[in-house]
Image 1 (cartoon, one colour):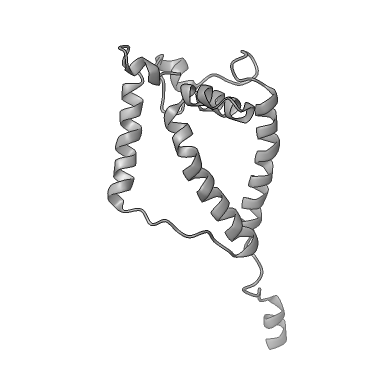
Image 2: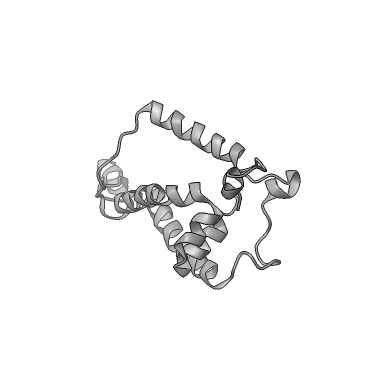
Length: 147
C-alpha cells in the first residue's frame, strides 16, 4: 500500500499542467503574429471590427492596437504609435511580464520581479480611463489620440 502511494506522487520537479498550457499559448502566438504580419487589418473583411466602436461609434482604449502591431511588425514605428499610443507604450511592460512568465513556466527561472505600489496600479487605471475619454474628444490636440 505504501509503495503504491509513493509511485502515484508527483515530484516537485514535475511542471504543473498550467505551465505547459502557458508554453502552448506562447507557441500559438507565433502563427498569429505571422498572420498579422501578412494580412493588413486595415483591409476590410478579414478581421472583425471593434464591437465597442461598432455599437457606439466611440474608440475604446484598445482601438487601433491590431493595426499598430501590424505596423510594428512591418517596422513602421511612427505609424504604430499613431494607431494607439497607449498600447505601444505598454508593449514593453507586457512583453517583460510574458517573457518572465515563460521562463518561469519552462526553466523555473524568473526575471527580477518589479513590485508595483498599489498607487501605481490605480494610476494606470486612471491613465487608461483618461486615454479612453480623451481620444474621443473631437477637438485638436485630442484628435491625434484617435486611430
